[in-house]
Length: 617
Image (cartoon, rainbow, N blue to C red; front, side, top):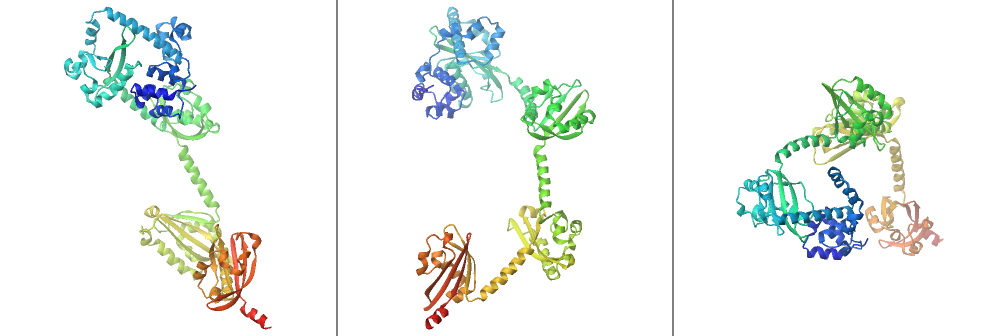
């Protein structure tokens, strides 16, 4: 289907219909109508046909769809033939069912014929129609308007409600009588009726009631002999009292249906007179399915391994008892629920609460504890502002310290006794610092982290290096909570000692040693530079790092042609000799550079004496 959007837009503007007005008539959003005209979306065939009716043109004017003729539908439509043999009650049933666009056009044609017949009858009646006399005796608010939306009749009930004379109303429009705010909704509904659309029992606030009374608004159009709109009769039924009762019932019903819990009521015969709507969101089954099959919940919804237990609970529970169990939803998902049952006279009623999230939280907590207990590090949590109340202490503490977990949890104050004598006082001072009020009241940092390394003496006199790291945040500190991790750092300590001894040896060398990490842009980030930099270059470590940021900076001029791509592993190891001038003194240097993954290692030696010795010989 091709939609002639430019033509439709032109006709809309000619009829001075705004986009939001068109959207309300069509029952869609203003953005949808706008997207049709901007070629972003295409309307459906039904939308195009209704749009043509609103614009007062044939459908083939704004699209390539064929016009459906009422005269052919009148005899050829299945709906027409079925309506011809229908009783009044079955006719209403057909009207209330879903209709195709052809059926709607047929019914509009029938409506037009009926209006034409009604108009002929009215023309035969006298000008002072008895219908107005009857309307004046009706308590509903009835009024007529001409095609310009001005009052041409208003009944006595409406005049009494407004407390005005008819002369103050007739010949005026809504805005002139009621003001802009009260007129807005009426104008919208009246405009819809003026364009031939059905308006029946639409809820409105009754004008002149200070927004305190509610009514149901309906409209009926009257056409002249030539089929053009002549006038429209409007009716407003005051249903405020009914609304108040209905609102109270709906409020109660909405509270039940919007609750996260299912409320159900069961009679002695096993039937359910009421089940709350949340049953669908929890189980995936609709209320009617349980009303038709009272045993559906136990036989289909309750998870298999829980059915026997839940069945025993139903038969033997006391009023107020509850049970938690698993259910399987209609889309095969597992959920956790909690059901509570009460008895009163001949009724049994109860609630079913979805506790899947809470159950999942508990499962996650247990999983987290299992993970903590499986970690090689020992995790601990205390909650008494630096006291000795240990809430959680993972079993790994026994492997790390050689002390039973139960003893440390019950008597944490004895822990310093197991620390190496040389580290004991240091640990006690550190512990006193993080237990002091000033630490807990420090709000300058949102989170705090303190750590200390120390030695413990194991059985047999073995030494183990441990690190205790304590954490807390501003929120936790206000609750008196801190937590920490004990971990074995023996290997790291030994490696640090090895590196310490290595660097002491390197720094004693006449040569200069450096280690750097190669970044993506081929620049260096130095990890270490030995003290030999002073002997070789007469520079500080910082000066050397600033001057030599890339491999090209590092190599001397006569060796730079060796390097094309610094990351190319085939260039390494680099081994070169060069002559350079440092502080006015000529020196011969030998450079060796090695590469391992993204790390570079360099060794620079002063070979001046060696060179001079060779020349002399």
